[in-house]
Image 1 (cartoon, helix red, strand yellow):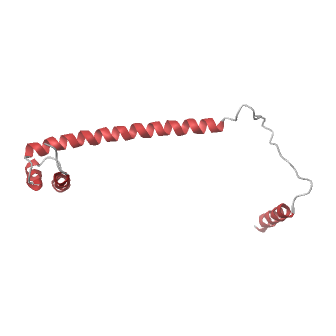
Image 2 (cartoon, rainbow, N blue to C red; image 1 turned 180 degrees about the vertical axis):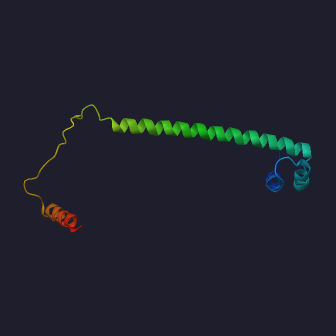
Image 3 (cartoon, rainbow, N blue to C red; image 1 turned 135 degrees about the vertical axis):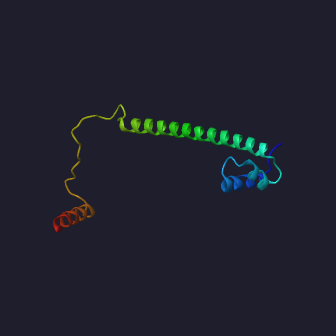
Length: 113
């Protein structure tokens, strides 16, 4: 029959204490299951863990593909944007006081060291 939460908890404790394979000791620790039932439960848990591991790997692979596609898409300029290698620069004839102050501070800072 179905294992209770308590039986599963005791089973996990027994596996941690005795390792996989000493089904008599594990059965005694669980208290309500035979060694054969503990061995069978272990096989089911191992298969479940393996399926979960594979599902997680598949999910990680899909996530990686999505991220790579998004990065590639974002690196490609939209069709209406010029792909010229000449950088465009807008020069303001009279910078605002804040910009002038920031530029002056940057020049002074760069000269310090």
